[in-house]
Image 1 (cartoon, rainbow, N blue to C red):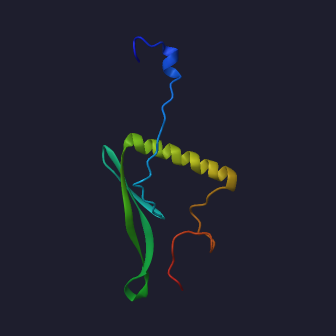
Image 2: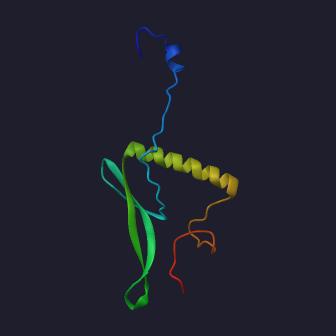
Image 3: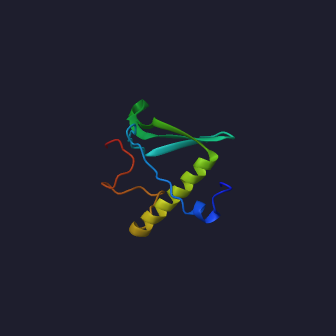
Length: 114
């Protein structure tokens, strides 16, 4: 804070935020893998893709599409933000069940056809 500027004037100042989406890429991910270091959180976003394995048994392949590396402060802000949007969604639409298989036609991970 400037010594010449009264405290009340400093608090009322607004900063304009401009968002540049010109280099943005949009991708879909149905799974995430996380790893950590002392300084960072590493998040690999991608798709679980079922493919035929040996003896024609299905095998899931995790195809990583994007890697995001954040410091711990950024990761905490992300966790708080995601918690808020999930809570708002569930207040409008009901609880999201993550441990149960979804009904056909409601999305979810791709499956091998029978």
